[in-house]
Image (cartoon, rainbow, N blue to C red):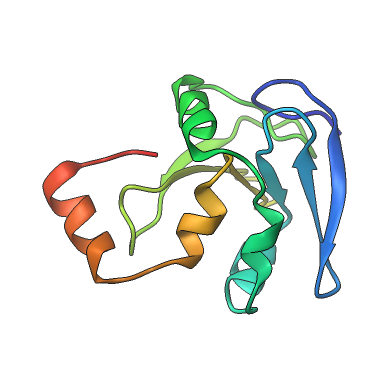
Length: 124
């Protein structure tokens, strides 16, 4: 598969028997349906997110992307508990794309995230 953001090659990464696909270039991560939610509950799984969040945030400017799996137009989404995290979700196969650094942030949900979303409207 090709990266929906930079067109780099996606490489399989396995953590706790869950396979995800990470871009060899920009380090964004493709999760098939429910994989991100499963890995969020597994200690240490943030290790799969090896990318630089500053580089990942630059890819937020890319508005229209196609699903790397089924080629459908993906929908921009916001995490309801951490409104500064924006990701893309496929309306057909339900896979999701996190840019570099977003999965680590997704796992580190705390009280500061509530205030980040309310006061700064920050988007990573």
